[in-house]
Image (cartoon, rainbow over all chains, first blue to last red; front, side):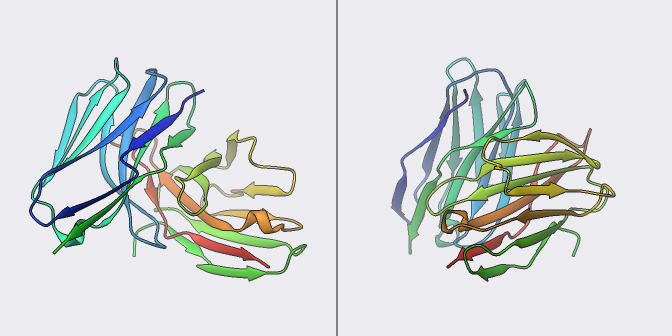
Length: 112
Length: 115
C-alpha cells in the first residue's frame, strides 16, 4: 500500500530565503509525481509534474526532483516571497491504476 | 472560464439529509476524479471516471455515496443520509488521456458541513 509522507509539516522562513520541501513514498512503482499548491479554503493548483522516467522539472523559481529508487522527491523554491505562503502537497500516482495518493502537505509561511 | 468548476461552493445540511454536488471538468478532458479532504490532511481519492465509465472506486466510498457521469461530461456526487463525519471539502479534478502528461487539474471544491 502506497504511503506518502511530507516533511516538515510546517515551515516559517524570512522572505528571500531558498527552501526545500521533502516528499517520500513507500512504493517506487510510480507512474508520476505531482506537486500542488493549496491556499486556505481553496482548491489545488498544479505546480510541477514529474513522469517516472524523469529526474526533475523546473518552472520559474520552482524545481522538483525525483529519485524513484530512494522513494523521494524534493521541491526547491528559490528566493521565497510572501505570496508563496500556502500549503504544498505532493501526490503520487501508481502504475496499477489511476488512484492518486497525497501527502498531508507542508504549510509554508514566508515572512515579509 | 475554462477551468474545472464545482457547484455549490458551500453546502450546509442537517444530518440525515441527501446532498448532491456537481463537477464540470475542463472541456474535452475525458478523465474525472473525486476526492475528499478534511482539515489538515491531503485529499483522499474517492473515485475515477474515464468518459462515462466509473473505473475505480475507493473503499472510502460507502454505500451512501454514489457518483455518476452520464454523458461523459459533467459528474455528480451524491451522499445519502449524511452524517457529521461526512463534513469535508469535496474536490473534483480532470485530466486528458494522452495529454501531456496526464496532469490533473482541480476545481475549487465544495465544502460540506453536516450539522
